[in-house]
Image (cartoon, rainbow, N blue to C red; front, side, top):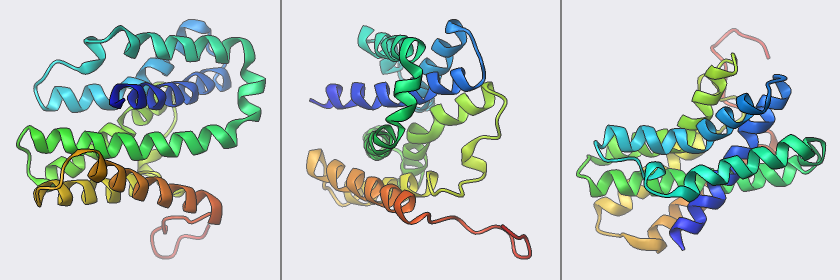
Length: 202
């Protein structure tokens, strides 16, 4: 079940990467690279920091799902763009899931709650950061006006706290994931923004 949820999150993140390729007028190879990086980059960074073989290189599905997302966007990107609101909801779900799972895995490998939470955020937003850098964009992480990294940080912090107090398994993961998901959805719904430096206008 956990692998299935992982693959769903990977598929949604891959769609956003492939769509970035369309907006940048990249060919199908460039689209596939952005899809793979967006979907798998955060998890690969996490596993490399934990000094374990990345799970993306242990299962064929983790590589093929972004390819499938690329094919869908390549042929039907106008239709995919039209259902972007639904994709953003799924993206928020993937954000919540990845930040919680990444934090829990980091705790299992002996990291402190603080470092585990930071690694959970890396799992959730690392792929998007790499996507933006490859596409020549300022990474969203550096101007989180739409509250993307912050929900992941709060979800990761809750997951780290629960794990530290001995609460593990799917109930803890679900609670942390739902917190990040709910905050991200609320930020999109009510257009919440992180503040700029004092004196800077909108």
